[in-house]
Length: 82
Image (tube, rainbow, N blue to C red):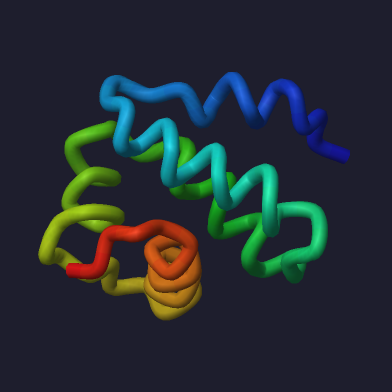
């Protein structure tokens, strides 16, 4: 079992925008999400900030379908709409 406070810390990134997007999804959706979504979120947290920013607030889409689906859900929680 992953400790949520550890995940909260890992959501702190190099930009405030990423912090907000990742922490919002963690707080509102992580515990009720599917195992696939939780694993996708852990995968996202391993990626460098410049890659995350392109996916979460940029115009690029991830190639992996399960990551792409999660990115869409994270985006939907924000006011940002690409």
